[in-house]
Amino acid sequence: MLTADWIFIAAIVICVVLGMLLGFGKGLKFFTSGIFGIIISAFICYLILGFVLDISFVQNLLADFDEWLYSSGSVGTFFADIGIGKVVVAVVLFIIIQLLRMLVVQILKSIMEIDNKAVKVINSTLGIVFMLAVMFAILLIVFQVFEMIGGETYDNFLSNLEGSALLLDKLCINNPLISIFS
Image (cartoon, rainbow, N blue to C red; front, top):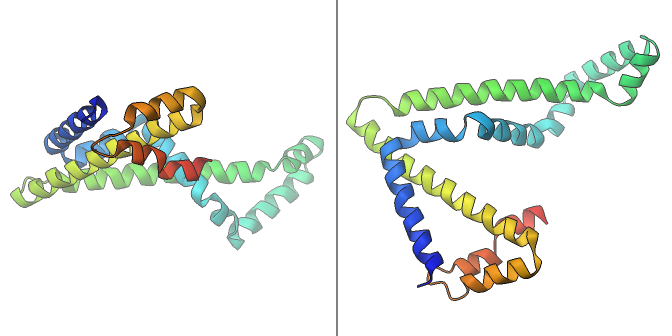
């Protein structure tokens, strides 16, 4: 077994212990607060903005807004030409998603922290699964970063993983993020 395998096993053990101690509610709250929460909300906005812009109600609002901007003079025409209406829709959508994310996380956290033995077992089990999923996502991101750097750095990194008992070299080569971000 390589050093990378032992590090991976240690990371799994740490994630299991943290997941068990923190539980799903606190783990979810931690990973969806602050900058992580903003990144999650921005990503969700990116995913659904096209659908929102295709809604006829939103298209009518944008058309009325652009008409009002064009009638407002040269500054309004400038803003209408650069599509400020779509930016406004994106900002409003981001705010709505932020509020929904905070509400859903708070509800899930409150449910998972009910003082009941069955809920505590479920909370700990989901906490372990959640922490392992976060660790796995971070591992894939690290592999992706090395692949994006490329060249000799990636080759050296991959050669250090070669022969991994846990098949980390195969995971690095077949990283699903590579097809997404390439």
